[in-house]
Image 1 (cartoon, each protein chain N blue to C red):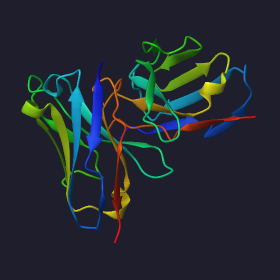
Image 2: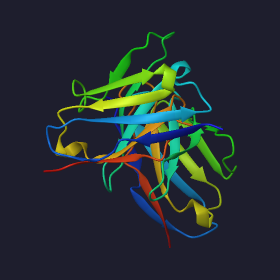
Image 3: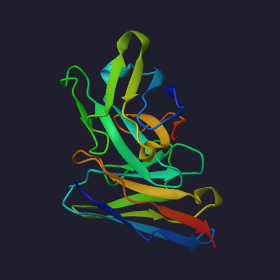
Amino acid sequence: DIQMTQSPSSLSASVGDRVTITCRASQSISSNLNWYQQKPGKAPKLLIYAASSLQSGVPSRFSGSGSGTDFTLTISSLQLEDFATYYCQQTYSTPLTFGGGTKVEIK
Amino acid sequence: EVQLVESGGDLVKPGGSLRLSCAASGITVSNVWMTWVRQAPGEGLEWVGRIKTKIDGGTTDYAAPVRGRFTISREDSKNTLYLQMDSLKTEDTAVYYCTTEGFDYWGQGTLVTVSS
């Protein structure tokens, strides 16, 4: 199975900050990576697919980059509604494993 | 508009069975790969399994912890996806979500609690 390691597991940031979350795969997954946002009690929301493609309706302050084993989700200017938990997921091979999550909290 | 509505979650004893449903509207479940994802209380997301379209063979894939105990199926006439869960264990306690092949549409989730 492909292991997905996210870092950090949590971070504190202020509105307007630039935030970067990283995800590392245990083997190459090309660009087969999704990023999700999840708020308490809600289903995950797809933000980025294929490592860098912005899902329709998602604000442009979200961006993704990377290929192979190392990936990054960047929020260019954190907004109040962005405080949530973020997950990466590889879609290269089954089982389609998720990272452990990064909780973004208000500083 | 695509909507996925899960149902069937309940409290069940270890060793018991449960069937979850995912009723779809706005999409035809027989035409898309469908997936189940679960989330234990306070934990992260875990891929459970998926079912491919008939054109792609109609086969299923499962995560190791549920393989041999869980079965994913579809009922085309009801446009509904199912997750049959047998030999349930306490570690199966989670909110279960159905989602489409691109993970772009998700249901609201249904809670399964396995406890004596």
